[in-house]
Length: 403
Image 1 (cartoon, rainbow, N blue to C red):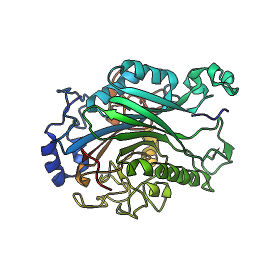
Image 2: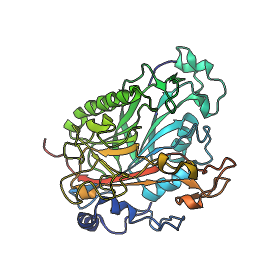
Image 3: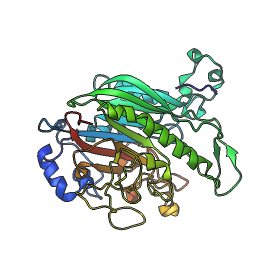
Image 4: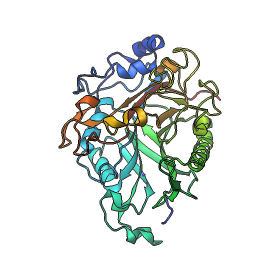
């Protein structure tokens, strides 16, 4: 394989949101505009959102979504309007997507022409899961003759204009293996090429320099923790590479599928992102995670840090969508993240993971309620992706802080 580097306004004005957020916590800020659990139609009443605050603070919104464009959607575009509905509901500044087939990327690019600017990098260039049955033409050394229907990778979209592209090599490409339920170790084929796709972006209504990155780390588990060590190294490489951008005064936003849990004792890969003040266990990083004070932490029923304090959390609700009732909580875990390099106050951080089940077998109606989801002949839920659509926001200063 060749290796080469993919709505509605808030109910209150920003100033009011910030004061309320100090009392109620960041996660509530996102959930305040969601329908009740029994209401599957989440509609927008005002398509104009205020991008900036009072001139000194800016509300920055991001979505990250592993859309499973190959495995779940075979490279098709039929379900993409459902994703557009979710994007329109939140009107983010940055759209960070993973596992996007090239034809799907082109669909987004054409659909959003004049509104969002999109860029792409492949994770795989010889992948038959996106609709092309023969990708052998992509195995030579000449990318000019590639069948791009064999490409699947990451996307960065900006509500504004993308600037310079920065593909950051993450490493972890040697000895790619997988192991199921303690069985034999097998090679991952075709092997992946791991680059974080980053762009400097000029965003509508945002005066700060912003850098957005879409990332997909190594997947799979194994008894010898080969894949976990690779993820630790990949996350460290990315965090270290972004130090220079943070030092230059940019707001750096990283979103994607990290394939790792937030608990430090189990999976240390995210130590390079979480700050020393993050509970529990801290980290060595410079980032705040959007869903920092969620009470749905699966090991403890209460938040791990006090809302409104100077402490952030290594926590958050599940970003994996159940496959069937028989699997229960086994598939409920957090592996998708949105990280921000700064915040004006911890209470302005907010994250919300939204499952996208299909309510009808034709795949034309969405529901966020598991009990209302349609099932296939195999008894599994029908859905856009096995990952949740993850919304995150933060408030940052309108001017770069003095370092």
